[in-house]
Length: 510
Image (cartoon, rainbow, N blue to C red; front, side):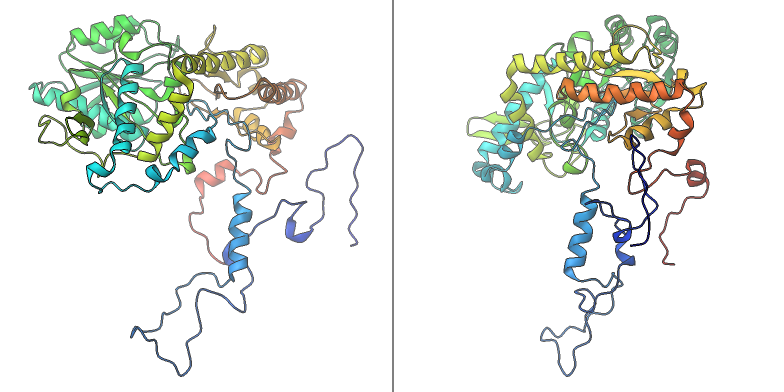
């Protein structure tokens, strides 16, 4: 080995000018595409045509199907090595604002893997799945109690699906009441992007409510958007909102909406900040969806599938989707359209993501009412701790305490040439998943941080330490080095402008 590595004492050795083991360092592999691997002499994909033999099946020999010609060990090692590049909540802090990336207790997983739950099939006779139906029935009742909204449907398959179910319920209610002129949905300009998309999919025209000055809805802005209210079907609001702030004037706004004949849909993405402490129905909510992964710790992302139950008022319950689980004289059973003819119908083939229902109920029962209250209080405490430690290092667009997530911007660093993307990429270089960046869109250079209640103070302090160091580097005029980050990852930083203007959407062999 002729290459020479020089290490200066006190500096970090990063990407030495030497290539060992195809670019691997330590036990971190540089993994090429499967197509680029050396073809095996004994692949298990395209097999040679048998000589002097006929297939007993009578079928023609399978032709070349065009997959990489590698052996089983090569294929297994390839995918195992790729899996080590995954970042997950089990491997590190996930401060994604508006996503609530919390720990998934292993107790939940054990419960979901019990044979009586894991091996059931939705087509089984009702009498053989009474335990599974009891789980769903109990979860319905608990979600109704936590939200103050007694009508609960578990079938929506994810948060956006639940959002669709909620707005379709509102549309169905107006249709059955003959309110053909109710065509407008009011939505704050800081809303999740799915909100206006869902309203449009359901046939509503979106009317935006400005929130930029205060970060919150105001009665004055709402009144202006409402007008005489004759064309307003409802409003979609997240509370706490996407800036991590509690909507203080919500009760008065809800009263004005109801007086105009509209319904209040609450995006339940941030329910983790309220669970066990405040019931959304008490500030005027008529329908909301709940992300079970965000509030009740079912797996998020690739560990899914998702689940987005909706909870509605007694008035709207006849219109929500079927089925729900009911209890009759012969036990639990799934309701049908015949029993509730005013329903908007089915949104899913069966009754929802049952494995997620088991996990959510296990989480709720293991915490109890006092534990759920502490969940929301600790989530708010952790976010405010981060805000208190970083408010002098980064710009805080809206003063005062936050709820479960805090919002910062790059305003103080931008003058030194350091932007939000530099902060995010430098966090990656230092082993942290970045926070949500450039959202909400109403705040330039946004950095939305949500620590959740499951992070320890030690974990938060390490994150805060890196954020302070980044701010100090930018302030000292050393921000140029941050533009190069990350430099120690298997893939380096993209040229974002070129990637947007000249995207390579298909791999082609050289």
